[in-house]
Amino acid sequence: MKRKSIKCLMGLSLCAAMLLTACASKEDGNEAPVTEETEDTPAAGSTDDNSGDKPEENSGNEETAAEESEDISYFASAAADADTMIAEALEQYNAGDYTPLDEPVKYNVLWLGFTHVTYEDLDFQMTDFDREYLEAVTLNYEKSLESITDHNIDISVELHFVDDATPLTQWEGADWLYLNQKTVQPVIDSYAAGKSFDTVLTTVQTAGEENVSRNEDKDGYGINYVMLGLKTAGIENGMGYSTFDLQKPVDGTYPLEDPEIPSLYATAVSVHEWMHQLEYLGTIMGIPYPPTHAYQGETPGYEPYTANENDYDYFEFYKLVLTGKLPYTGGSGTEYVGMYPKMWPLVKNGVFNLGSFTIKAADGSGYLCGNEEDPTLTLSSDPCVWNIRYSSEKRFVLSPVDLPDKLVDLGNAWDMEGNTIGLWIYTGYADAQSWHLVGNKDGSYSIQTPYESGRLLTAQKGVQTTLCTEGADGVQNWIIEPVK
Image (tube, rainbow, N blue to C red; front, side, top):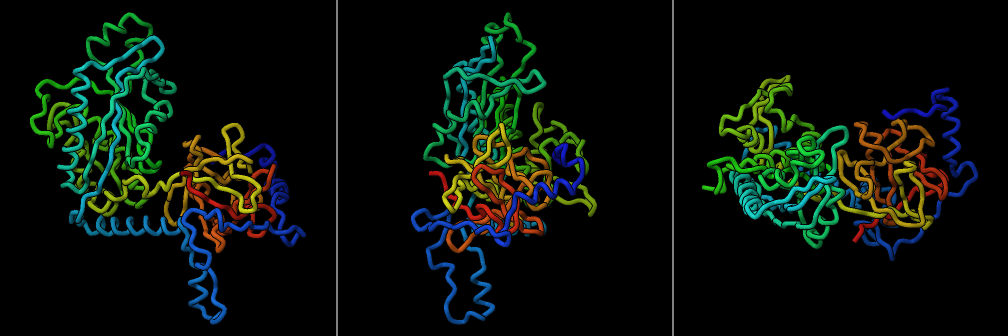
């Protein structure tokens, strides 16, 4: 939990008194916010003007009233679709059912080979052979994964080589270097424009005699190493992202004899890092899902695995995970965990990550914004762009596009009238960092805490955004529009 302020440590009664001043209500003599007409600016997924109107007759009909109160907005529909897919996958998992999908899941990979990367004076470049080898790796990755998963997933890899010199980033507190997603995002955007990719893999080459001779006399060589592999984003963040170095092929494994057999070391690394992206399924489904490093035998419930299928990777373990047949011993005995066929549709980009949106006050007073310097949300004259991701239980996570590691967060996880709402890193307190997006009749949305109080995100121009009861003074209705 986040650190409380010094004033709050003096006593909750003082804190509560201070916070209550932020949420004036209609009963206090203040007028409720006026919601502007939204006919010309429909919210995301808003229905036509008459969809929520109550008929003049049968006003006492309880069934009609229930239908009227049902949220059929864009976000409610997205939540329902995701919940249906999760329920179907969970049913198959609980039944131990491996029935394959009627149609394989189409899964699109953008793979970027950065042929020239640098760090201070260090300079690493791919050779012509490295380019040729990476082409074989991408093919081996695609065909072997399809074969392993009994073609429940149909992978299409689009490979591009990026020749511009690109700087590496040093891992904080260590000597590891890696290709930071923020650094290469403009390149990703240029290749992804107008297309739909589910993940991005980036590869650099750091081994080879040419790179040794180019760098061996420079400061830092032999101390700073390019990280073998790193997952920085997965299905919980929208489009996944993993990066790794190519390394040299093991003797006797290249050229490929059969692309459907995982035989290249770099294929093993790419599959390993990509599998990290899928681990979120355990959270979203509420089931034991194997960590990608469980082969080490240090994770309770999992036995250690060795590289006994070849001399350089753990594909026996990877195969068991990717087919839902990895033994796991928990409190109820041994079960088989990993990817069941109906879990594959859940890894598509867009199932949980719904895209980028602006969030505008329905009374026209500004846009909901936050920044790194001042984490408290405010209203701004200029629009800010938010990523909205489905979490579970009809909840959504809101994160600024420019600050993807920050989430809209209820201060100290206190469900208290007038408590401030800002940006904070992931804390594990789901109730404080996920929100109901409740559709209103006029096409606007209320942003509601999942706590029992049901208080709403409430904003005023020039004032900190707070959590208040319905009807409090300030903006509580929002127009949420997709960014084109």
